[in-house]
Length: 339
Ligand SMILES: CC[C@H](O)CC(=O)C(=O)O
Ligand SMILES: [Mn+2]
Picture 1 (tube, rainbow, N blue to C red):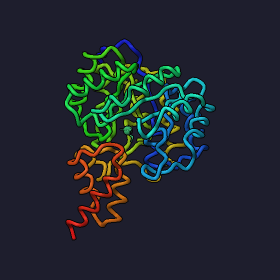
Picture 2 (cartoon, rainbow, N blue to C red):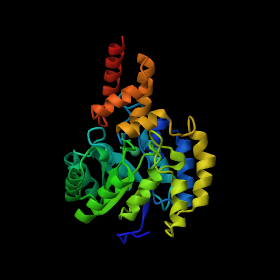
Picture 3 (tube, rainbow, N blue to C red):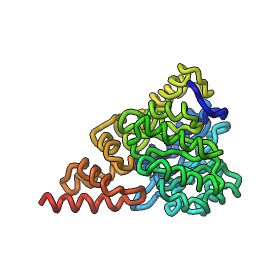
Picture 4 (cartoon, rainbow, N blue to C red):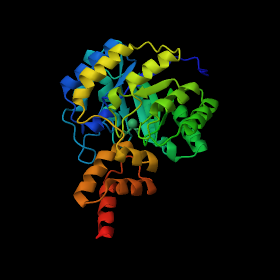
């Protein structure tokens, strides 16, 4: 595989953050400890731990966490030696207050996430993270929904604020391989910092898209064991690692240990096996935030509406993260129309 970056691939396991959506933010401390122990043993580079919507996400709107995320982060830090603990922060949901708290208890990296057209709201958090001595990376969500030039412009803003990498975040699992290629290529040509890629497997192309991203020079790569992430989950970590090995790229993570962890520890945590169900397919097709799936299913049941219709309408309205309340509005409107 040709790669146009000299930096090594760094993997971030996101099941303890993106997977929080799947378990409705009910991770226990024991589950977090067991997963982190296994990841540490396998040699995972970074492990992201937080509420699914990032620091400060435990609210009525996004779903209350069973256990305070700071307690979970602290537990993760205690269980890790070489793996670094990362957090996610969406400005407005999380604040610099939570960022400082996470840093004090040992988080070493933060991904500051904004909608793909709103990088400007990340300036304060990125520079604060750098001041706190953390790695600070930008995370441009819903990257399918903006033209490539816009994505580049917004990534450059994050670079100017001090971000050490910027992610193309395919929140809806809507990007196709050629669209990933053009985005990563354009960023590589315009930025001096590393490029990352975060996929969702809603259209079953997460591994393929990740390979394209790596081929174009992305070096920060996300995955979730057993696809424990919102929607149909992310790039499946224990699949990606052996695929890369077969391509001659050893990322220094033990694939057998990942497989064992997925099978023995993650599978029992899943409320049901992760699969590409009708809701996920429609999210990828309509370009809807993966974390909206469970909210839309609940709203569909409550209002007697097919949740796919809700998702398609949300896609048309270009709903963005943080607009979970719109899901109920749309369901109520569709129910009225139906009546
Ligand atoms: C709601 C935050 C979201 O889950 C962040 C993320 O992982 C994504 O946009 O894909
Ligand atoms: Mn995600």
